[in-house]
Length: 455
Image: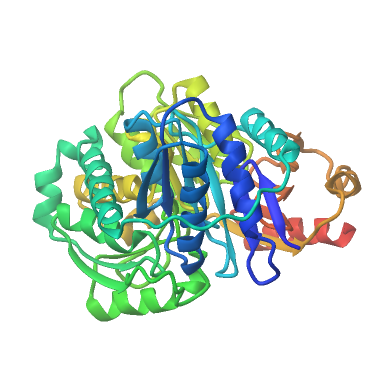
C-alpha cells in the first residue's frame, strides 16, 4: 500500500486501494474535530478521482453537521485564498500535486488559509489515529449549479486580488499594451480556466494547449523540461512571448522563453524575487525566504537590490513560517513556487505570473534576456526509491566531505564556497532526493557521484 502523510498532507495511490473511502471519511471526521466552529472550503485539482472524494468529504461533513463551501475545480492557492477571505474554519484541497494520475490526496488548510504546520499535523494525525473506522454511508448529491457559481466567485476573488498587487497595479496599463502572446499548459487540470482568465485580464493573447479541465494528463504532470516538449514547440510555432506551465493544483509555475527554451523551474522564484526586490530597491533591507534546496541565484539577485535571503527546510509551510517570523516580502521554492504575503501565504502560480509580466514590462526585456542576466548555475536533481530508515542513510554520508559547512535542518546540506549538495527524504513521495548546484557541471556531477557511491 502506498500512503504518505507528511507536512505536505495526505497522498495515496488508487490502483491498490490505498486511497479508500474509509480513509477519506476518517480524515474528514478528524479534520472536523481539529477545526474550530465554522464552515470548511473544499476544492479539487480536476483529477477524475477527485469528484468522488469531493462527494465523500461533503457527505461526511454533512453527517457531522458541518457546513461546507464546495468550490469545484480550482488551484490549491485558490482554496487557501478563499478559506482566509471567507473566514472559514479550514479548507481542504483534493490533490496529489505533481504526482502521476494514479495518486490523489488531501492538503489541509487552517483558518488563516495556511497549510498545517508540523504541530498542527501531529494534532490532526493523533485525532485520526484514535478514531475507529467509519461506517459506510450513501453519498450526498451535490448541486452542479451551486458549485459552478462558487467556482466563478472564487476565480474572480483570487484574480482581483492579484490584479491589485502593488507590484502590478502601478503598471497594469503598460502590461496590457504589450499584448503578450502566451501559450498555456495546465495539464488539463485546475489551472485550465483560471490561468487563461488571469492572462486575458492582463491583455494577453492566450493560446490554450492542455486546458480542457478533464483531469486527464497529456504527459507526466510534474512541470519539468522533459515533460514540456509540446509546450516548447508550440511557443516556437506561434512566435509567442512565453509559455506557461502549471502543475495539477497550479501552485507551481514553470516558464518557456520566446525561443522555446525552458528557463528552468529554479528561475521562476529568481525572477519573481527580482520583480519584488527591484520594485522595493532603496527600502530597508527587504527579506526573501527560500528553502535549502533552492538555487543560489536568489542570493545573487537579492544582493543586487540591497535585500537579504534566509533559508528554511523544504515544505511550503516551513518557508511560510520563516517568512512570517522575518516579515519577509517574498518567498518560495525552486520547484516553481512563489509566495507573496501581500496576496496570501501560499505558493501561487497566479502571483508568479503577475510578477513575471510586471518584470518583463518594467525592464522592457524578453524572457530569454532576463534569464541571461542570471548566472548560469548548473543543478542536478537526482532521486532513488527509499522506504527505510533515513537516519541510517544520513549517518553513512555525514562524513563524506571535509572543509565545508553542514546544515542539518533538512536532511544534510554540505556548503562549499561556490557550490552545495543536499540529501534529504521527500515529504511527498517514497524517495530520497540528492540535489547539487555549482557553476561547473563536472563539479555538480562529482558531488552527486560521491554521495551515491557511499549508498
